[in-house]
Image (cartoon, rainbow over all chains, first blue to last red; front, top):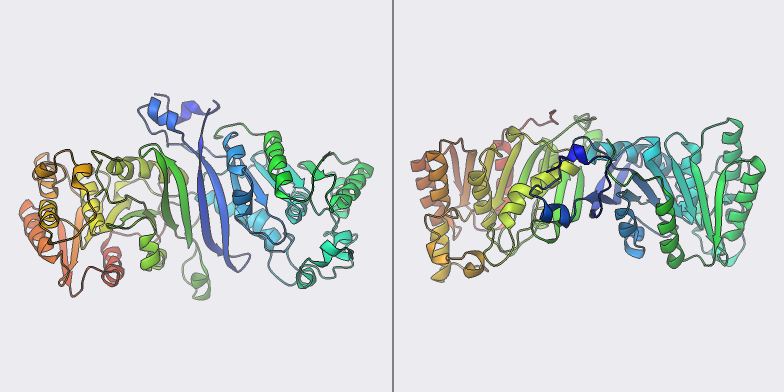
Length: 288
Length: 272
């Protein structure tokens, strides 16, 4: 019977996922927080064929994807409305799905420090509880819509923490979104916009402006995570993607952009999170 | 304080099952009251209490019907709460291997995911009613795995319980012919706690310390009085308590605190 140690580096053919709902006190949010987590665990074959339970992992850690919901959402969205568990299972990838309320995942001007929570507290906290790697090359972040903005914001704020960041239908031009008079933007919680930003109508050039933040990092010659963005060609939010991508091209930053047929909905996010997880540099097993 | 509701595939049971897990983490109470909050450091592990539900129940009972989370946080104790259906914590003759699941697989599973100590001195098991029986059964099955074991209002006189249910003196949801191949022959078998404890003593093995408590108005009280006598005769390291009370969650919420005070706790995280 191979020991857990001997199994490192070999691909586990079929694993299962443990689905975990967690509630805990978050010091950076100064309130209780909920997250949903998928962690790979052993499969039936390991047990039925072998004589051992194989749970021992001897210091092994899983690569981890932080996966962010959109506006109006919460920590159960991705697990309920897409098939992330199956896609992550196929790559032995742990997935952490936090709640960000409508914060845009930033440290709100008048509110909670979601950026600190997502990019610092959560990885450090969870590494003390679960077998999750915090190494840059093992840490990925992705999200949809507001969560796409959040994923790129975290990646550009803390480029040393993430190996890969993906925005699905991301709200990547925050200046335009906050100033928009279009109907869908008028439905966004106005009081939240006032709480999130110091001045929601003067975002251009600040760190809340992803293009400006990217320019800053490019000028600093920072080593950036791999950046991947995708958006539906019929999606109302597509212009913000075109704007960010065009800015990134002008800066000479390396960003992969894929346009695909679709609108701002879970059909698009389910099929494209599958693509994102397929693209992630996963080793397919625990890492020592 | 962090709680985890965890659904996972158990190869032993051959289906998905749920557990609740409590891990002490710094909370607002500790910050506001300037209590110790530096215990969740890198490499920290926690002492662990496996806590078993009674008949008709599941993994959620203890968290919903008592304040176990608060008590565990106060004492920096991890708590793991599994489900065992109405199996009486047996490897069922027609059914699933609940004893193997909780005795062997569950510790391996939670140790692989959570910061929980694997040492005997840090591992405890307790339960109520059917779970009180289950806790003692685990302690006697694998005495080298547990330092201490507690039964609250436990079905500790097993052959007495089987007879009392068959005579209609006590009600229960147990299908004995599903649980055992020969339900008429449980006396003296490994399902009989008295017989199993005697066997382990004869083998010269060190048994965990035992805590037994029962309400004096509980329908199961006479069986606990009898079991107390037998356990004393066998020579177990036994702490026995009885208090006014019946077979209800008031009793279990009150007396799980007594159990936690009785456990050999570090009241801090531990290192391995």
